[in-house]
Image (cartoon, rainbow, N blue to C red):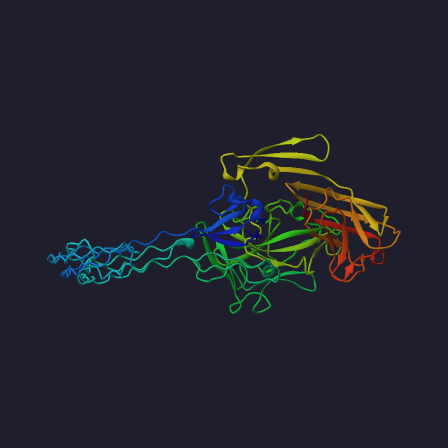
Length: 539
C-alpha cells in the first residue's frame, strides 16, 4: 500500500501503468490495482503491455538406454525420498538375481532418497526379500543431446511489446529453443522537481531511436518579458549544433522529431498582443492564468505554438484568438494550421492579463510560476459522462453526474460523482480586525472531498495590526491535511520579501498569508488587490 502521485509509474503483471490521479492505495483499495481492480482506469493509464513469449524449439530424441546393473541386497525399509523426474525409457537391462531373504528389521525412519542418475532406463528390480531391500540397480548412461537449434533474432515489438521469438532449431536431441526477440522498453517519467527545473522530461527507449521524449528544451523569459524557446545546451535559439527533439504522436505511436533551424519563418519566440483576450480568459488585475506550449509536426520541422488548454494531439484550425481551441503560432510563422497535423504539449507558462498594464500580458518568472517543461502535461482520462441533473434553486447548486454504467469506472460513482458549485465570502483580517473590502469572482467547486477556490479581494484602507489572514472558506480542511494555496498581487502592494502563498492548517478554514521568511503582517500591506487560488481536501 502506498501514496501515488500524478505521473508515478508502476509495473504490475507484466505491464506498466502511469498514475493519472493522485491517490492513496489504502483508501482506494483493491479495486484500484492497475490492470486488475474494478476502477483501476480512474487512477491509471496503461502505457506498455507485455508481449507474448517466443515459440519453444522442438524437443530432441531420447538417448539410448544404458545396461541395467544387477540388483543388490535389499536395504532396511525406509520412507522413500521424492522421486526425480524419469527420463525417456531406454532398453531394459537383464533381470538381476534376487537377493537372499533377510530377517525383516523393525520399521525405521525413511531414508533420504539418493540423487537421481542421468536419464536412462533403470534395470528391473531384484525380487525383494522380506527383510532388507537390495541395492538399486545402476542407472543406464544418459542419451546424447541433439545439436542446439539456431537462435532467431527477434524483432522488437511496437510500443513496448515483446519481440517475436527466433526460429526454432532443426529437430535434434533436446534442441535449444530459439533466442527470444528483444523486449520493448517501458516509459518512465521525470519527477515533479525535474519538471519544475526544466529537466529533460519523461524518457523512453523503444520504439524511439533516442531515449528521451523531450531533449534540450528550455523555456525562457528575457528582461523585456518576451517568451523564448531556447536550447539548454546553447542557451539560445536551436541551430545545427544545438538541437531540440520531441516525441510527437504519428497516429500509431510516437516519432522523435527535431528543431534545428528556422521553420516556416518562425523565430522561436512569442508576441502576446495588447488587448488580445486569448482563449476568453478575461482581464483581471493580479489574476494569474495558464497557457501551454505545443510542438507541432508539419512535415519540415517542429513548429511552436501556445494553447489555452492541455490535452491536444491534433492541431485545431481556429484563427480566432478568443476561441478555447485557438493556437497562437510563434512569431513570423507562415505555417498553416490543419487538423490532420499532430502535436503534443511540452510545457506551461503562467501570465497575468490586465489591460491597465503595459504590456497587457506579463509572463510570470517567480519560482512557483516560472515556465515549466513537461511532456504531455496533465493528460485527461475519465469515465464517459452521459448526463447530469441540477439540484437546488439557489447557490450552492449540486450537480449529480450520471456515468455510462457499461464502463468499469462507473461501478462506484457515489461521492466522487457529486459536484457542488457556489460562491464564498472572504473576510480579510489584520490580527483580529476585519477590513472593509470589495470581492471579485469569489467562487468554489467541490468534487467529492476536494475543494477548488478562487477570488480577488480589494481593500483601500487598513485598520488594526497583526498577521494577515483570510477567513470564510466554504469548508474546513480535513483533519490531518494541510495545504498551500497560491497568492498574488500587483508589484509594490505587499512589501514582504519572497514569494507569497497561503498556509491552510489541518481542520481549519483560515488562510494565513506568508512568505518563505514568515507571516505577512499589516506593516507589509499597501492598499490594493490580493488574489486567492488553489485546492484542498475537506472533511
